Length: 331
Image (cartoon, rainbow, N blue to C red; front, side, top):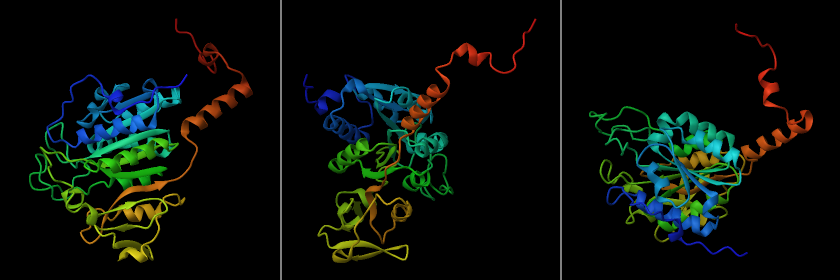
């Protein structure tokens, strides 16, 4: 039986989308629905999991299975869902506050374990749902309701964080760059293991224009370099600029001297170098795929271990486990 080809419309739920007019989340939703249609996985085999925040309304707007969980704990729920049913395609939607503040510990362990889950982290450098407090990614000096004199915190770099957790697939895209975003999402879904995608997402109410220095269409070509496997790191409206690394130091060069990018090298050092170029006015801000390496997904190793234990010791009984070791009666 041939499965009917899915369209973006098939993934739109009957719920009214309730984000602020102009929010970058609308574009991300549009790209995710398009990517899901292109991937072709049956809707009943897709699960969206979220925590708390503006981004975490996502499961309501996808016509798939969904689970709107609790603040910062979406990685734990997603891990349980994937390991109990490895055939599901699981997407985890979070924000810079939900994922890197209260949920930072959970996210770190999901990344290091390499569970086959696609993590989308919407980064708007602010707490939007709770009305404009500074977040773990807010830059130093950012004035907010909770930092009226300017934040003195040193912010997280989400890409550097993911690489430090030894994530096997790490990428970045931009909410207004829909074609690029859709392509990145499809590559993330194809990866076996945890894929981590940071999405620059504008909050029009509490942090409008936070990425305009690199993401605005008027400057994007000159202020971003797209890291593509096997291609030179060339950028600029005329494709006349390039990046090269000399003695662990990225430098600007002409297009002819640009180095070829390879996200498949085992060491995360080249990717980490690229992640440190963020918002450097003298350098382009990298988007695209920072790292993509192969490693056995957590749930496969877990299944193999369970199979081996059963082969060695039999299936066992719950009663035997309960009564194993020292027991006593209370009279």
